[in-house]
Image (cartoon, rainbow, N blue to C red; front, side, top):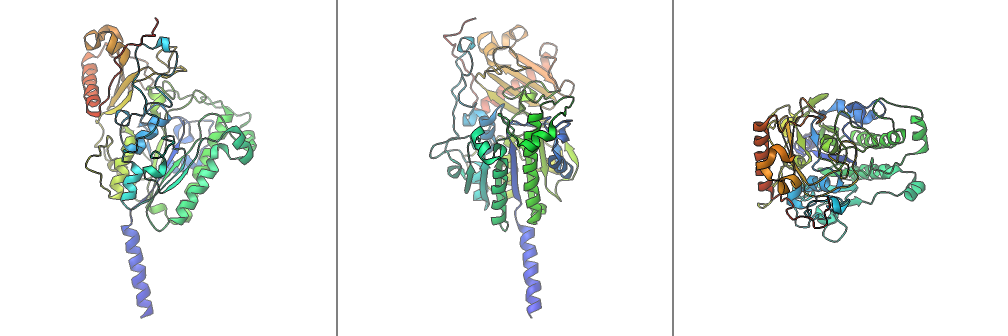
Length: 461
């Protein structure tokens, strides 16, 4: 009798495990560029844990952040919406740089994600998940905008560690604290579905690395990457990922856990992204294309690559589908579930993707359109192999569509043939230009994306 009861109990346990929703672990690096890992081709950076994760899962070679820098990109992920819907366009404000050089008054920026936004954490919590964030939040500091107000059961967020913090803890960018807290959370919630937003401060400046890691890279140099201090900080981030993955395996959760690793925007000038043009803060490829790995044993075929473009707003519908959750009737999502891409399908190949930045960002870097700003007001669309950038100043002030042949409002690139965005095809391919432009304007209308229209009274030529 006792043996029969044990068999029944075991069968019920197996059935429960089979029916359990998958755990979701979303690991987000800060300012880690498309080329900043071994699996993406770096010959200086050592990222053995990320490289192993890439072999165990699927690498998306055309993955994008929702914006060119931290706060708006994170707002896109958490909300599942493009920037016009949540209004977080920049870090701080949209009027950064020499004001007399700004031809337009930019659209004002929101520095926090509105409490009214139904977030990915709320959706997963409502679907029965235990939710947590550890690390960088960057979407609000006042009541109503904190992680616990936005659906996270556990708030392990904290500001970027300063140099004096690092001296005290010897924990670069808080990598090991973030990792340890995430591991504890998994241990405590191993018997129920959970969602963890592992939100790192690395590899954002300033550089922090332990002495032994600095020594490890001393004297080394790659063809593309030469900054050994950055390599050391990058290696610590990879170490944190390895500790987290080891814990998932130790807990017996590997088979039922989707792990996603990516970055919040493109790379830094300290770490070249060739052949991509530009860096963080720009809407050329170097500013928005990011590394992306998804691993889910038994669902995602190991060692595979996916070339179809995706963007971080796709995570909300993807995770929601896996959780079996439902949206409120008034919630609009701009992304698409990529579960089908995990399975090797190609049904999202020709859908358009939008970026909208109606402001100014200072500190131009190599690849910038001009020598004054990293970015001027711009809206961008990618569809298939084609990408179009619409610059608001020339569009609003220099004749718009009627003057396109001469006003420099539009740049058009075929990324399959020109990943470096060196050859603007707007003049030589007017039919494709107009097709892409009309698609962009339609998307902007659907999402409520507004351009700045007022002239800046302080502008001086």
